[in-house]
Amino acid sequence: TAYFINLDTSPSVIHVTKSTDNGVTWTKMTDIPAPDRPNIVVDNSPASPHFGRIYVTYSDLGGATDEIRLVFSDNGAATWSAKVNVSNVGGAGSAYPQSSQPRVVADGTVYVGFQYYPTGGFASAQNRIAKSTNGGASFQPSVIINSGPNLHGGLDLGDARGYFAINSSCTTFRHRSFPIIGSNPANSQEVYATWAGGNLETSYACGSLRGVHSDVLFSRSTDGGATWSAPLKVNNDAAGKDQYYPWMDVAPNGTIWIGWHDRRNDRNNIKHLWYVDKSTNGGLSFGRDQRIGTVLSRPTDFIGDYAGLAAANTLVLPMWWDSRSTASGDPYTARVLP
Image (cartoon, rainbow, N blue to C red; front, top):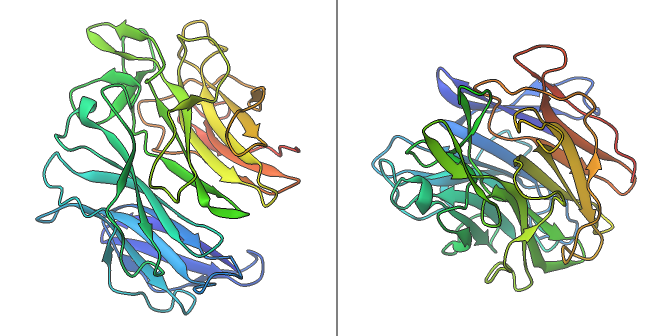
């Protein structure tokens, strides 16, 4: 059984469709009222008390307070629960949470990574994680994974997001470096996060804009998300080039796979290729980066807000933004055989 969601803006709802024949046919299920940035996960762990439960998180923006919300379904998306507050930060105006990514670990615990901007500015960004041990009925207070003035990476245009130039005139696309979550299939207390940030990079300028280059960074928790390790650089190129929009998945055998857009092959630091790397020791270290993309792609002034990657023991399928066929870009994949 597979579930697919997409966001409609008129009206503001999440459409949910379902396939029970491996994607051959699809049935429209019940919509979820929501304004922005939905993400979906299914509890596929037989050991979980909520096995089969579907979770959808989204950004509930535009109200008196802006929060990350969650709804769940136990009947195949026929009906949905009342919305649950995930972020519990009471954001409003420019100080708001955004960009959630849910993950269910082996014992059924639900983790949701998101980003929060306490003052609404570039330097105030925080990567946070919230945790539910009762099937999404409520969430504990969120914990900071990483924060600081260079959390984003990219150029500072005066708002909460980072930006990357796409030409010498410093036209930019936006980048929101929210944390992508994973976990050890054999140990639900071991939780992972990856994001693109400038914590370990060098500063630079583009025209009148200033910022820091961006790496793919990784952090791990061994106590169920309560505390987190210092950021570890995943990409193994020298400083001074940009990496952005990473995604992570953990294969059933515990191998951590991370993929990202990478500019190391362009001397002008504009065009990108897709790279992947893996860890076989729970994120204590990563191996040699593997280039998957084959044609350098020049981004446009908007390339979406995330990429993707799914990992099995014998196959990894990434999804990235690629302009080899059309200047406006297309989603591409490639079969990565471990």
